[in-house]
Length: 358
Ligand SMILES: *Cc1c(COP(=O)(O)O)cnc(C)c1O
Image 1 (tube, protein in one colour):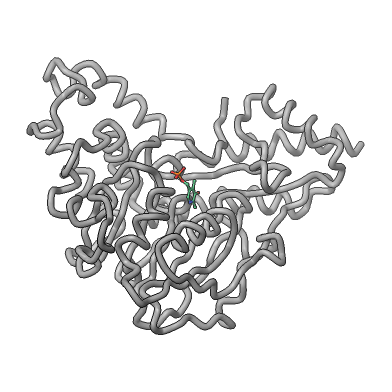
Image 2 (image 1 turned 45 degrees about the vertical axis):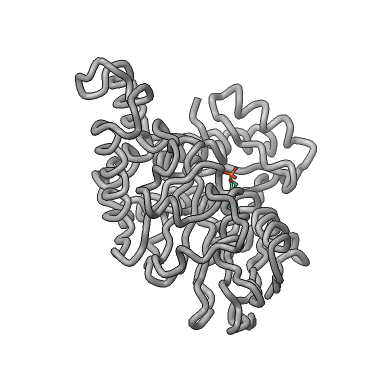
């Protein structure tokens, strides 16, 4: 099967092969990396190298901590306000779909939230015009979702939030877009879309934002103990960190984010160009708002959608059915998906189109 799933998603074949080769005896130790103490030298080396590789990939300055945390991106919906939303302040959020809404809902449990703009009126098929959005300058932080996995939209520019720390959920486009980390106060991303398996979430946080959690914050939801103990205040998700580290090294070997970005541009262009000229398939999202990672589309003849999904499965394409809240189809083109995979998909769609429009 060629896997176009939205997450958990495709991992590079060479990463899986390496994990398989060293599964039962990591570096000649006679033990799996899953079985050894997180306090021992074997795992310490794994987590140190994973952090170093991610720092190199993203150009993360020393003034930022890199934390590996369990609980998914969803846990960050709570950790961000618990740590950053100080008493008497408010948080500003841009609403670009389900994931931002969930983040907003959660933040409201811990303090005042201002939603500066919403794409809801357009069913989240467009990003609100950021030049028209005013961000409250007294906010404790400003939150955005850089890529909207479900709808297939993305922010093509960062909002001008002034001195307010910008917080970004980058779960579905981290390691594609070449961001300048210093423009953010905090970046978080669940690994299972573009970086590794589920089970670990990467948090990149400016160090001065650590250590101010709201009173009563559970320790496992406070960034401080993670930062103070190298992400090992308690047992970290060791195997997920190991695999994410292999993915980071794979991306570095490709040429880093400039290389993944260039390859992803080719993949996205190939599929969108086909959708734009197809007489059967229609892209959901207008060109300026399109995601490079999650390509959503429909059929001009909706009665054929189930046929298309079944036929794509039978032809060896996995995960093309759209999210239940958006409908239609979605092909996720994360870093591990190859250009040849997308060529195969476009070939299949072209044949399907001929069959049903002849
Ligand atoms: C998948 C996703 C989430 C949720 O991630 P979990 O790890 O399941 O909590 C949050 N935000 C975005 C943008 C996502 O794509």
